[in-house]
Length: 220
Image (cartoon, rainbow, N blue to C red; front, side, top):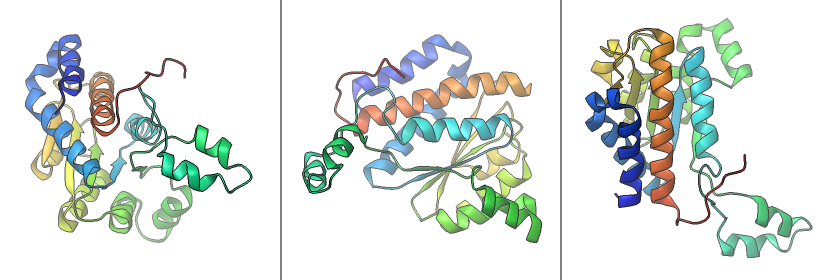
């Protein structure tokens, strides 16, 4: 891990001292995600209610530039030049880190909920999208959300790594996850308040490892 990457994790723990209780888990999650993207894998993310929004937030940070520029390779820009809009595409597209939020497939999720069982909609998507070596990030403030737990079970059966974000105790996910970040809170909103800086730091760490340091992005 680069020193500049580690600085993001150190900074997280400095700003949120309560997270020092899960320092090793945060570092482990960062290293697992870095390894995932170095080997061209993808991240699947799921959660309910506020954690569903967190799933979308994480994917939004990974699939485009977050804190630093991610221009597409020159070779790809050159290939785009033969198309009418190639120059514009080449100058605006940004290199992604592949990630899928399992909460936004409305057609599939409503069909599966109606035809089969709504508790298995995340598990069905893991079965469809997941490949051995991928990572499932399972978010549940209690650690016991049944649809998230089922997703973790099929992920393990398929050979995916499971990183869980939970509250204190970890619930059922703690026994299933390869890495369980059990932030030291029990009330839902307080757990979610600590989940956000954790996944921001993880996204920053991965981006810093995967792309050359350039101009940071201050405009949103």
